[in-house]
Image 1 (cartoon, rainbow, N blue to C red):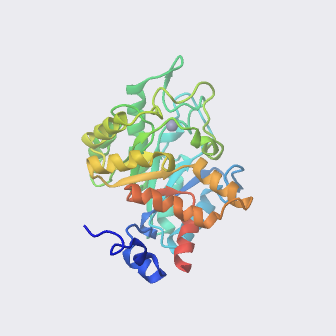
Image 2 (cartoon, rainbow, N blue to C red; image 1 turned 90 degrees about the horizontal axis):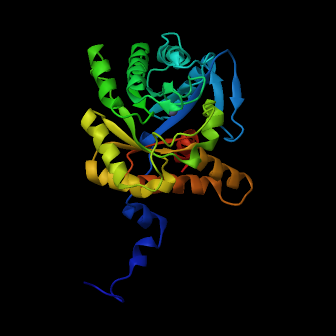
Length: 326
Ligand SMILES: [Zn+2]
């Protein structure tokens, strides 16, 4: 093995062209998925206080937003719905005229080159804000799973391209796959939130999706932040049940998990750079404590370097613009 002074690692860092030539990880527009929050009404565009630059939008304006996202060259959006009406079982989630179903149909009419991913869970639709049907303070797994399957089918019927269950119930990927196939949607892929931690980084999202639980928290179904082997078992279940892509959420503080999941399963792997990750970079950037653009890119490159093939990020539009100009 060559040693110093013949070996000099700095040789390949001495100018930008050389650095470009040997760079190991790249970030491209094809890696980006942009989350959108849909609310009832018309001409509504309301900024989420804890997430500057992120808005709740009515269907008409979500369509306009999707046109812009398409023109920026971002391949996919993921939709979250805030319904007019919430009830015990979250029936807005599988209403054929629900907020997400309306949004999908309207986007599909107006925007051709954009994949629509839909988040499948009940927490945005239940009056208690929990991810499933309750008995006392317990979430009933199997009853919830059958409603999630109904929700997934209803999204597919409206025109969704990819179904993304985020609930963390056991057996939901299999139930959703079976229900989709039964209704003739064999070709719609499932991107499962396979490894989703009970994380404090979700704080701002709860404002955006108006889905904070009325009591308790989500630790009975989301994963313990301290566990890693369990993450592999969660991912394994979803892969065995028929997930086409798997996700790790959050991303930035869980790079080891992304790395291990990608290493072990070699599946198309998504990572969700969540609201709190975005909010921290935004807030520090606004205060000029960090260079926001630089840290934005660094945070996303790190997620790709860990092994993610695609990233759900609120920065997607900013990144696309950055890539156009650099
Ligand atoms: Zn949920």
